[in-house]
Image 1 (cartoon, one colour):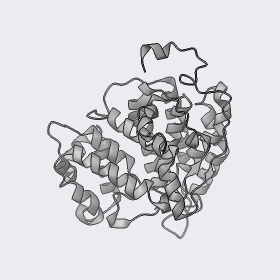
Image 2 (tube, helix red, strand yellow):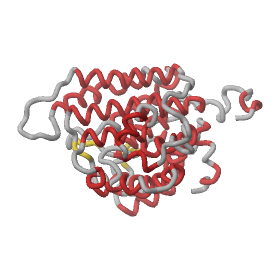
Image 3 (cartoon, rainbow, N blue to C red):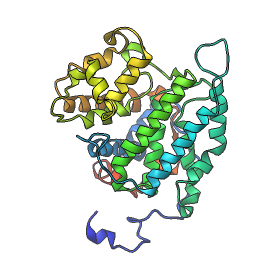
Image 4 (tube, rainbow, N blue to C red):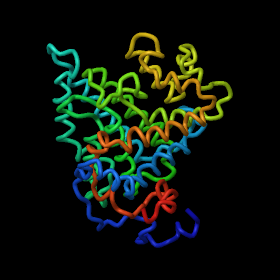
Length: 335
């Protein structure tokens, strides 16, 4: 943002979100396959992919140990995730005949369902309290399904939408972008992995050996961006156990690989064929570009995933408070 823009009066629609903005409880809007056209042409799609791409650029070539600004809002989001983690400890798995889908997860989820708005209210300032019920829905959607006791990339997308909405209403700012990925999203991943292991959650809509991963996608995108122009780690190294063990604490991509090898048995090429194929790509830049295309095709443009996505005012409004999305707005205006 230019210096002159920052001096604009505080009631400018370009500088501060309107406190009178109407917020609504998000609901499903994609009911049939033809509805996917509306989604792909929508401002919500442009906002979401713009957010993903901006963060992708922000973490390019940076280790998780890179020094970055940690705002009060970021600290509050981490505290929120720490609360979810503590609730897992307070809700141990129950004895049951079925090995997968431990029903204690429903008890854990019921607590989140009850407390979600209170949790989000600790992050959102009081002048934006009207946004809390809407934003809280995305938080509840981001941790899995309590009926099926499963988790997948649609739930992960809901957490990204949760963060995107916080950017659009001004809770998170442009200088938070590295912390959003390295501090908040990385903590979210830790909590989700703990949920998956503790309650033996099923993969939602898994493509099995032909899918990239049973549960996640975004950390592979942002993690491959971290590794662009790395002095010695190449894509072929992520199937090398020694390279992964020595570097996983610095790179999200390698942390994902480590988690896969802990959860699955047998040759990597057999249980994770798509990733095995990706290890043959010559550069991290090409891996990153390919994963972005794959994410659009396999997640954002697949009806079985997007049919569950919910839309509120924060996902429909043309108003973009954050520079995150504004920088991607112009090419898509009129869509």
